[in-house]
Length: 380
Image: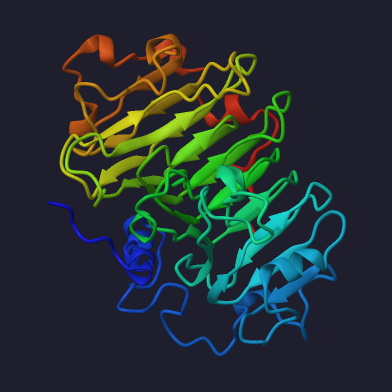
């Protein structure tokens, strides 16, 4: 029997306690609606100044209630030009799509409260959503609530969400609904949340020849089908990945956590380190990963290393990997594990759990993947 789908509000509230669970030192979630402050804040921009006490000449303040320079994130992006701008976002829900083009490099977005539950950028386009101009549907990339093409982007304490639900359009095949697509090199996210269902976090590059580096620290990501995917060189450190119940399905698998599409020439793909994977679904209903070899790059060799990570019972320990297409079996890709724990990490069929040796593991660290870029050392 199919379970009823959650409402949009229920969807955004579903992970209201995620910050505390991640040990972010946040205030208790309580009954507050996502995107509203968890306690009164007479100073909407906190310790980051205000339009009358500007932190730097290149700092803009955004507040949907009109207490800043601008009321929307896209309007603030459009008001910047060149490198090094900072946007401070007051608590609130920003229902809009946002795009950062390649010319706006070195941007920093800060959630003013420090609690990602308070600052939510959300929209509800899916791949199958018709474009307003009648020229077709958005497609996967076009469904993204937020798109970042520029290099050097940093976000702290913000929720990026796509709250489109399959139950709204049960006959659609274009059910991909991206919360954020990140394509630039040196893109960092600290203490952020990424909420969606299918294709939540698209960690990608602008083109095949760019090995874009991305870093996600203490972030929370939820979804069901391929909800962390793309061809970036991406490090996910101390992150929490949560798999959702599929109301439209009665049997396993409900979906896949990772779907990397690493270019064959790229020696480094996705690295997951000291993280955890939990699930709302029944035990064993999720695969850890499947390789994505897109039609635009038939030479891709997807790469995923998961190390020192707790895999909950929601992961199928017997067969944690699957094929997306039989022409590209997962066994021929670059999938490896190292010293994982939890019921989903139990090695029952050794050939289904490719593992690194201790010597090989020394090459799979954040330092090796990110090179001379060290976002884990930066503080604001």
